[in-house]
View 1: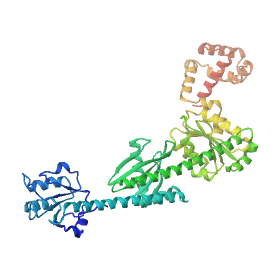
View 2: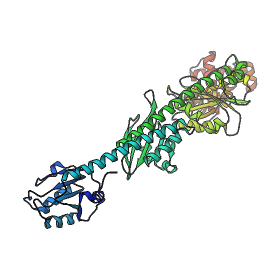
View 3: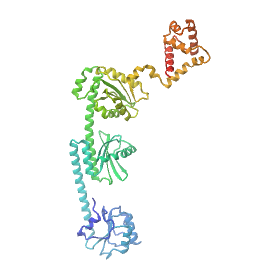
View 4: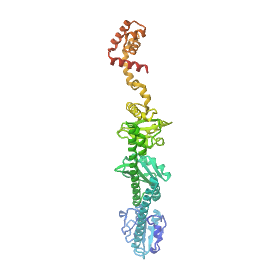
Length: 501
């Protein structure tokens, strides 16, 4: 803390006394001596201005005091015994009106003694601040080396700076907070981070009456999160160095976590490739060796992904999902677009995947029914086939078995395909409006019997020559060659799409 006017009055060797008792708790930033009629151009606020009033202001002491008050000086020290035997009454009256403290300096007290006292006090404050900063950094290091992890570092930082602290992830979401009520500030800080844009190198924010300092956390030039510290008054330079040390320690811890996570991901990826490849019999042995837990059979295979060539966010969301972690789900990146999960068949397993997909914009997935480990290769192929075949599907998570058993027709049943079917068969509909011949039914029976005339005629209950006549009318109306397999296939699909309306 800086010295105050009250502290100066308490220094008996200076012999000061107050002539205007207002706001004596003001801190003194510096001491300045001036005999100018208007010293304000040389002031920046917070000074104790010393004068003996050697030059009376041309516009009077009232204007002199007004200018000092507007310059936000800490106070006026008026020396008596040289130019004035006592403080001018006009000056005191104006000081009371403008609530400017006035200290009377006796003739026996040199101004340099006041300057030295304030400088010595400020030097002591700075020394104490540096000592406190060093001690705080030592405490942070001890916390970082202990078993408490980032939470212990955050608790030590909050105590050292007498503030609230938050650790946020790269998107601004809350990770840790100290003390517990710090979490209530997380949403506001996240909104400001989004406004400022990322990655952010450092920032100072105002959250209501509180000042917030923010530093990035990360390693190798990558921002993986942010450290925020807030309180009513801004951090001093020494305290900012403590905050920077905490950010450095958290970055080291995060780098260690990332290294461990990277090793675990590599191990899970190796086990997954064995389980879904040609060496499934080695899966259990390798999993035990690498310390990778395997979910109990029967298991389901899920393929999750996005259209972006980066699965890190999706992979992290799946790894951090509590239910999937408790189920020992095997999670690994499969390629640059997809993440594969092998998870036990359990109540709520699809819901857990839906929650993961909901966190990532544009994410979707496919999941199989339960299978034995020996069937994992086929299950993965099915899930991937359905995933990539459902790129424009409305559902976020698609059951792979349902899609695969629905056949090609279910994949083609779209508004565009239905419009195509209507347009292709429209000439037959138009003919039906003016004729009793049901050429649509004739065509359907003919195609269902693979183009066999006798079988189709028998099913329709007509002579084969009559059937040939009807088929001729269909060819004439549609302009299609019914002997062409491609034409027959298209007409069959169009009829089936109409039936599914």
